[in-house]
Image (cartoon, rainbow, N blue to C red):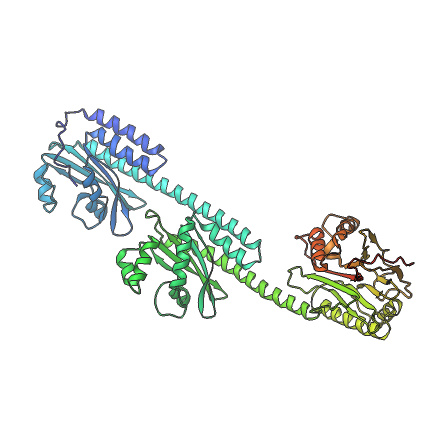
Length: 612
């Protein structure tokens, strides 16, 4: 590297060696305190160059294994500086030679420069002296400093020795700064992985989990991130995030137009699934795109993606590739390397485990809900005299709950309804729930009187000697007599909404859960046309940190919305007002309403008052 022909500075004036060494000593102090590589570059190309009267200075560092990158240049024309920004380490110039050999090169005069490097087009620039000093650290050469001084002058041995010391100080400063940057980078990545682990463990929802991974990554480590899972012989995109929403939409359309297939023998994501090894493309060139494109349309779309670097790592679960985590950079200055691959693999391991847990949880929960719904009635039938509505909302846990309910008309026109709860969860609770529901139906068919049904259930539970507690509230509604007979075994009280709007909380249970009482008395109240009675399980009213009576008071108030309108809508509104989204218990609710008689005039018949 030599000065450009336009250098019109006057020849170097004689200077006392002591003055030069003093200025170089100041440079040493500056290098010791420098905190950025950019600051080091400025110190070398400006202050160090000025100390020995150099009009051209350059600081070059080894870039990868076979290239040199100039991180600081002074005294070259802009076009020439750009030309020398990055060059092969085999290039015929002093910087490349010094980095390869680790030895200082001193050239005095234009003739010596031309003789040593005849192939350089700009070697003949007038009289010059150049010195290029290696930057050595930890037993290796990491770069070089190049200084070019006007005139053919010999540098004093003391100056050369001091320049060697300065070069070592410069190398140590760069190593120190880069080590601090690496430590900061690793610390940041460890903190990120810790944060990601917490967030990934906080949800068992598959879509939420995959979305969290992509959103955590963008824009900190990627401009675009996607997660594809292997499903039904293909890769299905489950989540993606992009710094630019419009670009994200284009990427989505691109993926639909040219999907990746795990079974294909080509490259890309399919190779990651097939081999279980990461894919790293540090620099995406147009030649690479042309070689990858399936046709001209595909090539144009690849170019429009604007990706400069990409890496994809497998999501490994128990040695099996379940999907692919992909990062892409649209920033030319961000190019992925092997260090990024290792970091992405760390994140992928955490993500794969969280995704697998969420997937298994979703499957188990679906089976649990299917099992629970299988032992509950699919539909409840009303009659001309009776309207019925119900709601069942599973907690979302993987274990089956014990809430059960049913309602059905009797042959004589009366109507039976009940809601119960088997304490506990799991298969045992589900089996007990199914047995209790079937038993209530059987006993009610033989004798529907509340005392008879609960008496038979008490005897059955006692005989089976089960450890599970079962609560139940049972109703027998009679339109002909205008009565509602209630028996309650340890369950929440029913709420009666009168046709004119008043809400009555019926008395609490007249005995403990089934199997724990010898005799039950029950209760009879009037039940007029338009009246409605509401039965619920405790999952609707109970909340953490709150006593049960507060929840029952909230339910009492909400029951008023069971107006003469559509019964299902009214029950939905009650559940919405009273329920708690954070609850981990199932919710069952059932409402029975006596149909209002409609006379010929089209108006409603006033309710007939009957004694209890």
